[in-house]
Length: 227
Length: 126
Image 1 (cartoon, each protein chain N blue to C red):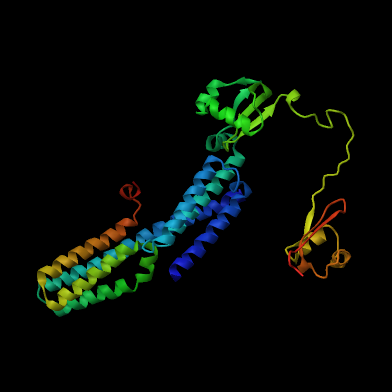
Image 2: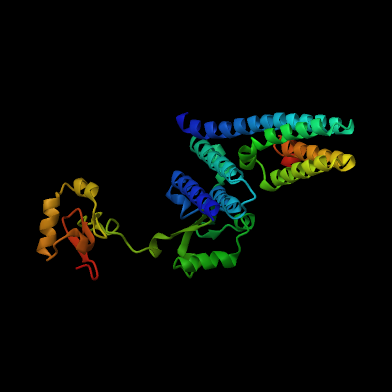
């Protein structure tokens, strides 16, 4: 049992470290090389975890090799566009100026049913509404409608608008004060205490979420049963 | 260039370790095999005490590397060799020449396989 526990801990942290190095994209949209890597790493990790007859090194060495290779290929892709095209492929235009590119669809084994399904998923029931559709390297379809099919923007309407988009910073997360964020928005713990007192709260421990937006607006959610 | 350094160093490190491990396993198994060959030769001459000593020497040497062997080799392969050593001891104790010779030959073959599993060869890769 101890062997299984220790192996699980080691392999878990190894994969976690690998995924952190590879960045956030690994979690969401995957390119082919990333998908293969994720599948192989997860599969490799489970073998020595379950079979005690295989040395742990037999799982660790392939995982380290895969991660190193992935890092190396990422760096090469950054430096060479030709290599990036080779390793990751290039996006394919499936609808160009409203015209369906059938040859491109055949090349990518993308059926008209799949195209229509993707269009419907993104809110377009009619092909004529779409100016461009691009099949990305991640396998997702990016759709750009004709200008007349899009809601007009304030810029297009030449209307002056107030820029009220701000990024709220979390100052209290589930009872814990995030001092780094407090310093970022140039506030003190005394100010935070005052804000809590004004809302009838005695301690940050009673707060589930406390955010401060750039325009000074505060959002405070009390903990359920926190008092 | 710095960004290339870490993955290249890791890959080179793994490669160097693999090559070193291959050489180490070859050296160890050749030595154990030679010790077993001596034991077999002594047994065929009827000197069972000396054969037992040679077998014990080989086994002590082998036992001293058990942890390392379990780290780099499949445990089944190591355990099989361990069982063969035990059987060879039993045959030496009983002074059974044909069984002893056969067991020692199997054991040497098993040790050769242990080293072969670590070699960079097309047979292993494919």
